[in-house]
Image 1 (cartoon, rainbow, N blue to C red):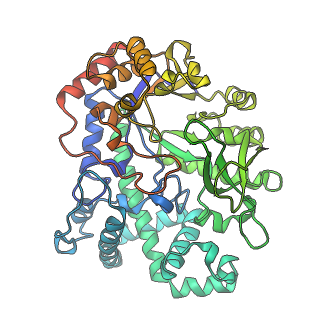
Image 2: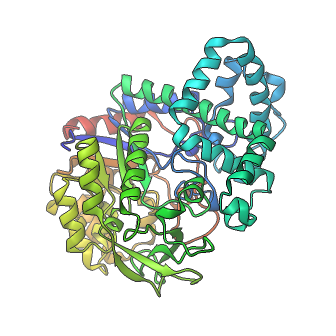
Length: 499
């Protein structure tokens, strides 16, 4: 895929400002698009949009296809008569700078259930609304039926993982599922409603961005959460034993981020026995992702060449092994069925010749993290310095998994600081802008800057610490933090370097 030279900002919607405890798809999201327009940006990169489960991580979702209903905007529902002001408890005070997930989940779910009741009333009188809802359900039946049933059962059982469900439910015994479909019909329909509203709001926001020449870069994690509707409904795609427990789970070996590796715990694909089924599922996944976004980044792309798998029950990722995947077969089939696609490959970590060959064969741009260029103890640092870049890559000052630029600089060794200062011509107190200029001025076809780096924030604004449980994915910026001066500086750099 030949991308046009462009730049953009990385910001997950949960980090938007707003009065309901978490960013939403309402006015503040449209204001953020306006900021992108004013600053000359053409791209908005986000993390996966799915409903978060373990650790509130968008990379551990209850579904690879569903949207996160916590992002639904209440003010839009008020305008559409799906809520009344008295439905919203205004006495709850939320942190303006952090998402307090437990508090937000209880607050929003209670109000969304009120909204659902109003929707049922309106739908019974409004044939157009009823048909729109039915059309959505029909168009998404391949994932929506399993997801809504899965979430209804989970909710009825106190949100325990499906691996702990009674055997008939765990093994999807048809008479048992039919019984639950009848018993939980209203709850199932509620979860369908949430998806209808989420996607209605998301596609309206995406349309506004696209109309103003802003493209969305979405994100597809290579693996799915073990506790997900996709896994429950498609166990044959993964390496499970006869009791539907994972034989092996995903992770990465010890690396730059962690001395014990990262134990993600996701089920790994059964490439040897379910290849065609895996391909069919991935084609649906990519098709769905490219409706919600204009470009998609595939996280941990190297897992399509070879993957690190750890025996189930291990406490760290140290005792894993490398196994061969079958990415060639998968991407050949994707190319035949869907054509050449706008995909960015996250190719960080241990990159071997088979990964490089896969990227080259399918013409996929990889990633360059500018912070990595200045690590004197890392042998691969030379690959991240801008003067060795090829055009077909995406340069980031940092990602959701890294320190902010200011946070990196504050903790860096003196030798690394000096190298960065000389290479990027860092002016006093402006290390973030030196890195931003370094990314935007590079030959990389796309440059992306996390909003935290535009704001010049330290690691108090870091989004995620890989391998650390709790306290991640919570950062939010507050209204007014993006100044006219920042907008003008970004616009000038973008214009100067032809983005």
